Each structure stands twice: as structure tokens, then as C-alpha cells.
Image 1 (cartoon, rainbow, N blue to C red):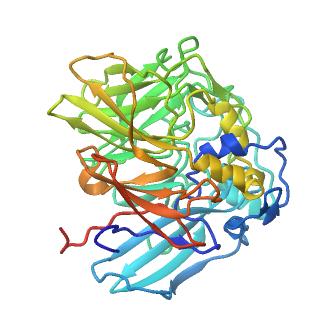
Image 2 (tube, rainbow, N blue to C red):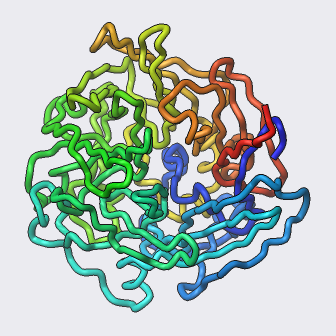
Length: 483
């Protein structure tokens, strides 16, 4: 940690992509798409020649684990004030050949008194256990357990660990379904798979991978009625969990959101929402879930739906009343990871900062078809080129002009960022100045090879890079004696 770029990041020297591994940037998929979708052997050498980061995609033995292993520092030292555990989920095997269907390893880096100890366990969910036992996954049910739910048992467990948050002080891992899994913070062994909520909303539902924690409340939404045999109307159920509770209070029920899908009223796919003290914020791109009911742990990546005639919008859902305000965008913005949102009281605008991954004219249904392992491993030149094109955008939503069309504005001139983070505990949902992210330093790189700190007010940035190293997302840790 330096005074200029203070963060914690797992640095991989051609070994394994952790940290942001499953939170893939789909810009790569657009330009790195391949025709074949079957599971081919993973090679470090492909059509584009040797992949400089190829070892990061090597599969791990399904019985591998580590417990409290001291890590040797190659250079520098761990700041004495850095105490706590950094959790990261990382794919370690891809039974069906699709990048985002990977089995997940849970990784913990424990910092204490200038030392770092590492532990790793596989996420022992239903998909991992079935793969290890070579047991075929059960077929989907004839109907969902409750109207609008996915047609799978309510207690099904997915390969979670793409993102982490806490409920009642318990660490839970999540993916794109409502069934999160909890694990022991020290041993990484499973506690509840899936985690049991204290309400009657039922399960499992499609949902964002990332929740928002603000003022102690955990906010998210459920997506209903999008898969065959799920029943119920297409829509959203926005929820909030109070501090110390595991009950999901319903903030809003939004059926057939025509603003997202003008003809059919489909809810849009959203990997991540945003939130302020007043609003739950959804950036709705014209990208819609497949209607295919697949086996637990698999997604029909060729079945995603798009509407190239829709421009997209931002939906502000009042956390107090549940009412929505819709701000149409002058062009569609597809983002996986947003940066932050806050109320600018001086202008009375809600400011939404995000990362647009690929041009508006490219449908997500095309992008997702390129998320095969072969695309990432063998087609690394096209993948890296695609990753280098993402850009930062700011959307200003005037509260005194509800429904006004908004034109996104680019922040700065730097391109190729993903996995943005901020000083989350202090600034999530509030005004902020700096963001941190992974960065593709050039269009010839295979994947993110640098870290960057960006001033969102001026667009100025500084970066960190070591040749042959591929960092995961940076997590800011404040120096108690810093300025």
C-alpha cells in the first residue's frame, strides 16, 4: 500500500485468476466469440499462440484444500494496521466448458500483525458434490415451488462465491440466484446450503449476483416468471433486510415492466444494482434472461434475449413508498459492475456512475455466446482487445424533472477498466471522489494486467503494473494515520 494507490489485491503471476475471476467482463465475449460451444480440452496454446496468462485457467483437483498456510512475501511488507480477512471466490473447474458455470473455490487471506495466511476450500454446493461423485444433475421440475420461481427445489444450492456479503453477521456467497450459501468464516466449511431466510417469499429465484449493503440494510431483487414452467408474471420483487434480521421485507412488486421490455414486459438482466439512502437503483438494459429451464448449475448461454430497438433506462425505486421513477437513456448502457450512486444535493440529481462494457448496438445475446473457456484460453488476443474497450459513464438523473431523457457522459479518457471498487463502507450510496479498478493496459494484453485509481471528478488516474502479473479487483483499506 502506498499513499497514492492504497489497496489490497491478490496478485497472480501466471498462476490463478481469483478475486474477479467469475465477475467476467463480457466485452471480451463480443470480440472473442467462437462458433463451437462444446467442452474442448483446455490448452495454453491456441489459435492466437501461447496465452501469456494461460496457467490462470488450469483446472484444480476436486479434493484440493489448504488451511492457514503462511504466505511468503516476495517483496515489501504488510502494513501493521491491516488486520482482517479478504474473501475471494474463484472458479477451479468447468465441467460444461462455459466460463460462468465453473465450480467455485472459496479463498481466504487472513492478515494479522504483518503476516498473511491462506486457506482454500471448494464451495461444497449441490453442483460440486454431484460433479465429484459423478452423479447426473436432476432435471428441472414441472413447475416452480412458488409462482414465478425457477423450476427447482427450494433447497437447491448453486456454485456461489462470485460475491460476498453478510446477513446477521454470517458470511454468505452469492451468484445469479436468490439461493445464497453461508460458510464458516475461519474454516470455509459450509454452514447453510442454501441459507434459509425467515420469510415466506420462497425460492429459488433469478436475482442479481451483487446485493447492496447500505445503512446496515441488505437490498436486492428477485426476478419472476422468466423460465418455462416457473409460473407467475414476469417482474421484480425488490427486497430489503434490516440489520440483525434474515427476513426479506418487500419494498416493491413490479409486474411486467414495460419500460424494460416495451412489448413483452420482461424484467432486464442485472448483475448488480445500486442504492442510496432513498432509492434502490436499477440500470435496465434491453437484455433478458433465457426462458430455458436448465439443470442446477448450468445456464443456456446461447438462449439470452435482446431488443436492439429499446434504448434502456434507469429505474429509481423509492425505498419508502416502492414507487418507480423511470429515466429513459439516449442510448442503451449494458454494464455488469457499477461504481456508485449518490444524491447530489446541490443539483438535486441522483448521480449514477458505471462501466459500459460494449457498444450499445451490440446485443447481450451475442456477447454471452462468447463466454466459452475456449474463447478465453485460445482466443486470448480478441478477448484482451475486447476488454480494453470498456469506458466509464456518469448518468445524472434530475429529481425535479422525473422521466427526463438522460444522455450518459464519459468520465475521463481511460478505457479498459472492470471490477470497480470504492471505499465502500464509508462512501457507498454517498458522494465520493476515487474509484479503483482492474485495467487492461493495452489492447494486446490477454486479460487485466494492472490496477488503476481514478479521480471521478477530474478523470485523472494513476496505475500500478508489473509485467507478467494479473491482479484481481483492488479493495481499499484506509491507513488510520493517512490523510
